[in-house]
Image (cartoon, helix red, strand yellow):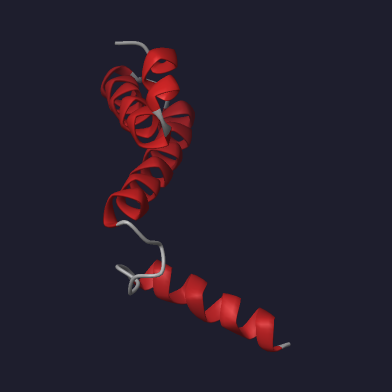
Length: 79
């Protein structure tokens, strides 16, 4: 399985392949700087997969960070 092949199947399969790739890279990474960067990307990919899997990003926030983002978005619209 290659990232290219999976990405050509659609966004969700591409993200799932990227998730697996990033997980493998995190397992073998020895650089603290690289591990931090990979971790941020890994978390972002997991969030995107969750949004796509739930069928809608309009569902209730699933974490305090999601709630903070929602409140900020509401404030910026009101301002």
